[in-house]
Length: 331
Ligand SMILES: Cc1cc2nc3c(=O)[nH]c(=O)nc-3n(C[C@H](O)[C@H](O)[C@H](O)COP(=O)(O)O)c2cc1C
Image (tube, rainbow, N blue to C red; front, side, top):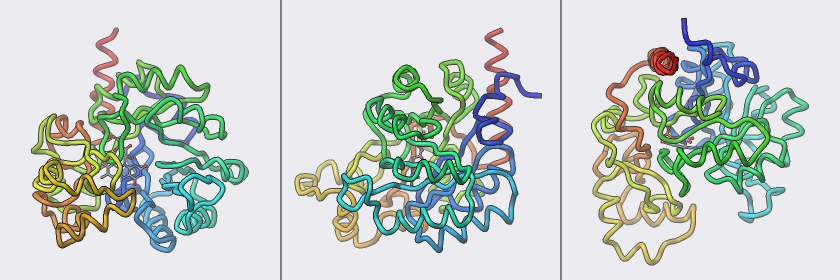
């Protein structure tokens, strides 16, 4: 029996048992992981960013072979001109059509503003969650009508902003009048309890769910997360051209010394530059082939809190037990 404070409004909003969302993560978060998390009572999320529309459809169907519980799809709402939110890229338009056709219950936006489709989502009974790294963007997203903001601090894995989670969460709660979900640096039940005490309605966890049996990725990648400590990651523009938290390795170190930094191409063209430099695709080298010394391995500072690789259901049970203990300690 878990602490009653863990039954938050997020559970009612999304129809889930526990206030834990597994983050959308490019490559890593596919149907198998999302299905396992949702089956265990959290909300699993498919990271659509690296998929075609048809690949996304297959992953959605995989979730449905595992569970009939709610799950989410995370779409990176990149735009054609980079500014005009009314013109999403072709990939994004494909993802949008698939989530409507497949009647996905929750969508998350990891990048950009889903504003132009929020009303259509609500008419279809979908909830919309939007990720931000600062309060200014949180206000913009809240004004677009989304249902909740995910405030992801500097500590988090993957593309990340400049504001630490400990400041960003309460600042975002103060800045918007819709619910806020905490992200960045949370990997155990103490972080979950702390986020709720600070006013969040739930948590969005990435890195903890990489070191997970059902996550897509080479075992070396998962093991490296278990091995590294609190200084084992770095926020670098090395791979995508945008600040992204990655596991430190030979490539991130070489980048620091490199004159290539001065010829930085903008996101997403950076990738081609680094691929040429390394002689192979850094994402595939790291996540698929397990070359942890050179590959692009996104992970957060919360790697320091992760000591094992285990099934999603065990991660969720542990988070809930630890959070219950932490909340009980408060009296
Ligand atoms: C491997 C990896 C890939 C990620 N890819 C995406 C993505 O495709 N879309 C997105 O919204 N966020 C992405 N993120 C960020 C996560 O959604 C999440 O906000 C972050 O991992 C939370 O911090 P944590 O890693 O400390 O839990 C990624 C993070 C990681 C670690």
